[in-house]
Length: 144
Image (tube, rainbow, N blue to C red; front, side):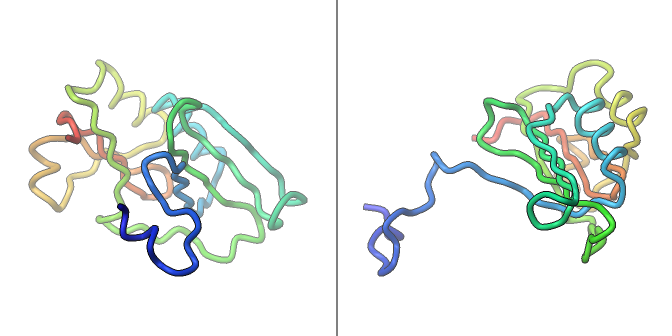
């Protein structure tokens, strides 16, 4: 039995069926969309304007069949600007080298090729910073 299920107050617990949302602030949602959609090939799953929920501009991108998506929050009411570090990574395990031209498309879409601080990523991946400075790691290895 999952130990979380036994904790008081938990009628449901996180598990592999849960959907994951990564939320990040963005200075420029149009630039972010060019990178994540035009460069990487994610799809726009949802967008909302400042009159919507939370008075923020939202852009949610991902693959419709994936169990995760990236929520980018922007707009004039953005309380927290992006403050990425070299450890803020979104890692995609590709199970082989990236498709020909993917790195160039990401750079053409506003990304910047960066050298990781961790030698593991230097050996097994390419790392590209999005327009806000958050790092996308495209790993040739498989996760499991």
